[in-house]
Image (spheres, rainbow, N blue to C red):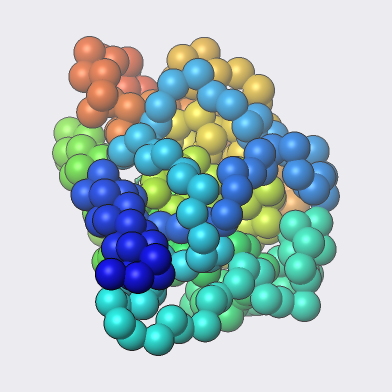
Length: 297
Ligand code: URA
């Protein structure tokens, strides 16, 4: 066996090991501290760190492996020629600040939710788009007076192309049902419409790039009430810096022009799956929500 055969065998063994360990994505050759990279265009309301895990699954470690922007499914089959590597953010706006500015300018132009979805489908300014399978725009009734906003799609949502399809979505549906709601009388979306690879949290830059889109989505859906699910959505929408255990149960004003929409902060269903005892707090919030919908809060 030649040296190059040995090397190939070692590489394949290493790859098999990482696949077995649950790795499904290569990002880059070296780890990045995204928080200290290029500055976001405007001060972020969502801080990079947060006190508790909120996503459905913990992010897997990022190994220093080659193949920037490629998913494992894209890797060459044994013996096959390698496909060309995809690169991130191949749009006119290649820097995060420019991408957010570009997003803002384009979002202003759309006049309906359908146009906004089409705009997002063609928007290449957010790197998450290049690792996600699908755009996850919204689910439920866009004419509803109630809008739920979560953080970012997970694997199930990415596969289906709709928000809150997995375990946390099922819990959200049960919580809604407990106060007489379902997706025919609520509109459901996220602050970021593409799945962050490996279920990691979206970075402040990614949230910032996508922010003009969620703002326009709120404007176009024009709900009377917003429910922010978890800390990142709460901080991004309300601007509060408070942690979710302090912010939850409160209404924050969300301004769209001269109109003020009330935004209620509550715990994320994924967090409740990890901390079932905290459901009592979420139940209080959902009773507050019911009272608000009934004009009693
Ligand atoms: N978690 C979220 O924040 N959003 C989803 O759509 C699914 C899980």
